[in-house]
Length: 280
Image 1: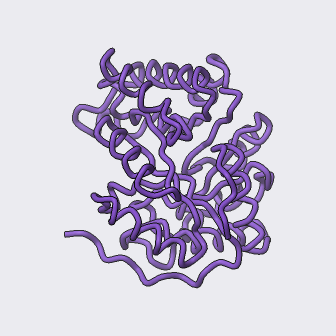
Image 2: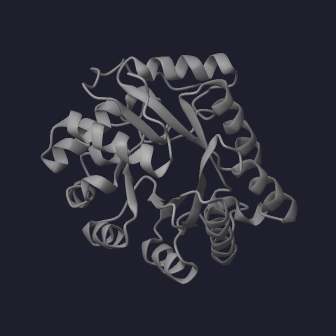
């Protein structure tokens, strides 16, 4: 049974972009579903969303979603936990899909040290690293940013980026989960950090400390929907329209105006994803 969606938040006074969501996992199937989700988002100031793949079926679907609504863009990759499925045929298809003009990033890729040993069939660390390196190379060849999944793997992710060389188009730490030390390392390297609803959780003081340190020109916001619904609706279904709660929580952590945070995050997303500014 699908979780109930929370009521809509108060609209933002500035436009913002959801830099990482999973519209298929939110229940979107048809083009009409995608447009309805984006209409709900637009009503509260969320003018665009990047919907992200984690397996081959999803990679095909996110491009269909992006073609269904001009407010939607796609990111294509195999999730680190599925890196053991990156055979030659999968590489060829991912490369073709990621080359689409509607795909604005290669992701999500990276390293996940939490699930191996806990999830049956999860890719092993060495398989994840090989796939991560391949996705970085793909991003370089396509001149697109790489969108990183980093779970309990901060130092190893940074080490791979150093050894492989980061794409010139940019590096995005999706759903940033590190502390102030990682935030400083990302800022020094010029990497973007994207904050999800976790920044609003009551037990996330170290994350808020990190959020306060990120330069405004490297700041992004996301829902990671349908996961990580922000406070005060944690545990309910998440969707791009829920992003204003995260924007306000992030602004509070930074001692900033929410509309200024929304505007900066939108401009940064437009830059790193090479998006045209929306007609407002």
